[in-house]
Structures are given as C-alpha cells and as structure tokens.
Image 1 (tube, rainbow, N blue to C red):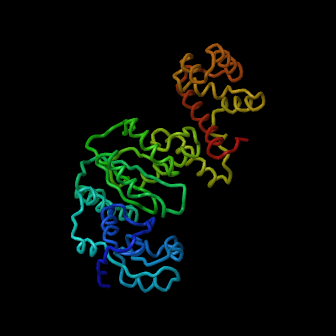
Image 2: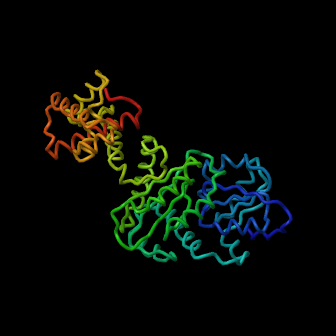
Image 3: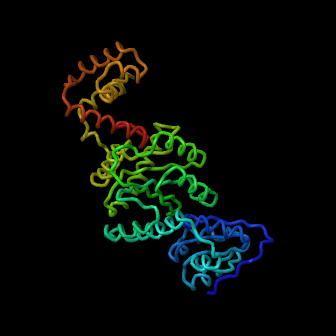
Length: 380
C-alpha cells in the first residue's frame, strides 16, 4: 500500500488512542494531529495486535474516517474493511510517516521507540539472552545501566480510549530520570536505568506523593519492582510488580496511595502464591496447617471474646517489642498493651525472646490479614 498523502489543515482533528499504540510515538501523534490528517486515528504496533479480539471488538463502535498507523502487512486493510463500522481509509506504516513528516524526534522519544520494540520482543520471547538484551538496551539514548527496574501502571478499566497516555508519559519523564516508556496491552511500562545497585524504595517521598496524586483520579495504580542487572529477569519482575500492586490495592491498607513497591508487599505476594499453590494441590485454600498454633489459638480467642490479642501481638513484634511504640501505634495506653501481652502469655505461653518464634508468629498473622483483606473471608 502506498503512503497516504498529508491532507490539508482545514478540518477538526480527533483521534482514538488504542490500548495497543506505542506511547514512544508521542511526538508522532502530535505531528499527525497538527497536520490535520483525518477525523480519527488508531495506532497499533503490529499485525498481531491489530488482529486481537479486543481491537476488533471496539472497531465497529468507531465512527468517521479512520487511518490505522501501523507496520502491519498489506493484507490488513482488506480484512478490516470487511467489518461494518468506520470508513478505514488506509494503513500507513510509522516508518513511512516519519519519512513524510521529516520532523526529527527527540532523544527521549528515540529511546522510547527502541524500548517499545525491545519490550514486545521480551514478552513474545521471554527466553531472550541477557547479552542480546544488554546490547539493545545500550543502544537507547540516555541508558546508563547496568541496573534496571520496572514501574508498571495498570488501570481499573477495560476501555483505554479515554486514558491520557501522552500526558502521563510526559509527567513520568519529568518525575523519573533515565526512564524509557511504552504501552503494552493498555499498561504503561516504565524501564528505569541507573548505574549502581540500590537497596531503598528508589523514589523520594515527593515523587511517591506526586505519582499518587496523578494516578488516583484515573483509577490507576503503579507497581515498582526491585532492581536487577540480569535482564532475563524482566518478565518475572513485570509479573511481580503487577501482582504486588494488585494485592496492595485490594488490601486497601493505604487508601491514599497508588504507588506500591514490591518490597513493601512482597510477603503478601509470597502468601498469595502459597495459597494458590495449596488450592491447586489440595483442592482447598485452608492455610491453617502452616500457621503457628499459638496464632490459631489467639485468633479463635479473639473471635469468641471479641478481643484483639492477635493484632496487639503482631504490632508488638513489628515495633521491635517496644511497649511505648506499640501503644502509640495502636492508640492504647502502654499499661493496656502490657496487660494484653500478659494475657497472651497466659493463653499460649510463647517465648517472646525467640527470634524463630517471632518470625513464625508474624508470618502466621500476615496469613490472617491476607484472608481478611484479600480473600475477604475468615479462616475457618
């Protein structure tokens, strides 16, 4: 198919953002809109993405003339024109449009372009060698390396057409240095590169707060992974970051937050994996068999007596067995906490000084919280 000519600038422009278009082409979208090409534009990255049920399902709902910007094969226009709905005026490859527009892209956009292609290859071929990925990442302008981590933004909607992707991309680049961004199946994938291993939560509190304020109105959330210099781990970090954010959001322990670091919720992700494995192997999800019996005894006492000994013990351990800190966290008088600890000792007679028991107790109580906050049910 021959490239479509640029049209005049007399008509009003609207365009539809597909969940599959590459956000690395942010400048390309701006150029298309400013050149007044047509009524609507749908960008998709490949033939496989065009042929997905999700796209074919929304196509009949689009009205007016549509240009599909893609690197798909010449057979695609014929297939799409057989679908009732919009007047598809052609498929124009992004490379051809770049040649026609003759407007150079910024270095950030070029980096995003390269990352967009790399990310799709990673997801399509997760066993790609680390050496190959390293060479490709190093070709991205601004890539520092060797460390990378992922920030995955997901949305509480299956309709991605109204999400301000370009605006979000621009804000992310302002907030997160050395970042490379694309969209994959409606999610915003941000790769962050840096030169030395870090063991903190990476973002400053100001960045966390700003991202929260951006994401909350959109019904979106972001999962931030740990870092790695082994690029073959990126598919795993992608899954972990997504799942951790989903768990944290479901638990709703931080209602004003939408950015979740996997390190803060990693234990609940491990419990979630354990629960699903138990459900698959045993046919039930009763995790009481792997919990410390003292926690089960306290849990049943609390249910019967409407007490909170389990909660007190959990936060006593989480506050390094500091009575004052525990009382402050629970908004109790320290004598009240002390009396409850004595009652716990009377009921289960545990050794508060044992680090092994402490680990088992905390883990077991986290299982109780998982049942309550994620599964929305009580342990039997």
